[in-house]
Length: 292
Ligand code: SAM
Image 1 (tube, rainbow, N blue to C red):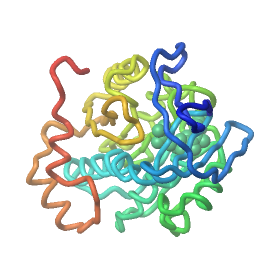
Image 2 (cartoon, rainbow, N blue to C red):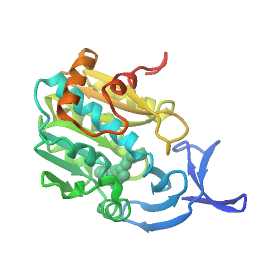
Image 3 (cartoon, rainbow, N blue to C red):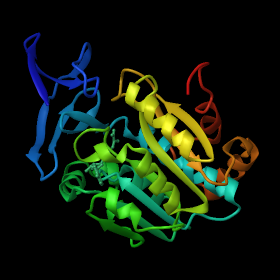
């Protein structure tokens, strides 16, 4: 975390352009230090703020804020689940979460009572432990779900072990720096494609709309997956642009999934969501001209 003294207060500033010297930034005043520590893999910080609630930062990069994380986690998970429900003709039974140690994506999966097995692979068990302890509103007890198996391994090796195994794969990794760097690669996207069942859906957190590395990642995913779709949402703790979520599938043509199908599934399952709705499902996939 970059701490600087400004206007009589200590501020947290996030570095904006990964791998480049920053030419702009954003800051927030930490009102309360909750946790500062180092795991084998990364620096972990949690602090309280007035506008954002608690913020989790890994190696100085903001991962979530407790007041805004519902937008990110619902928009990462629910469109993928509903694409599967509506597009595959079956029910999503086996789910893999890659990363996601804070438990937010897991909480969204746990809402689907018909899911049978949930695998979560996060390299860093310390992120899971401190998130459970200091950010309980994020996982909301989901780590206790009987369907869950947690693996503290490098996802790069883990995913290679599976072929046509998962119905839905959720890629909830840190931006490409430190331990996640090698997972923003065509090779890893191909491994994910291989690990998906024929009717499966994968979703990737692909950072800001305009970021250079994010554009590159989306281009690669689009090349590798027969069907591809971008959705976007504004997440308050990622304040510089809209955040993108990229969906890939072997068989499900996302453009053929209709509003009626999504709406009827959503009604039937009776899920509680604060941001996601069938209307948002479709409006979030309308993109400005020129976006790829
Ligand atoms: N919402 C997020 C964001 O803004 O980037 C991602 C959240 S989640 C905390 C990211 C997780 O990815 C972290 O817990 C981190 O330990 C995990 N991770 C990073 N590299 C990994 C790897 N190679 N294998 C498995 N998990 C990894």
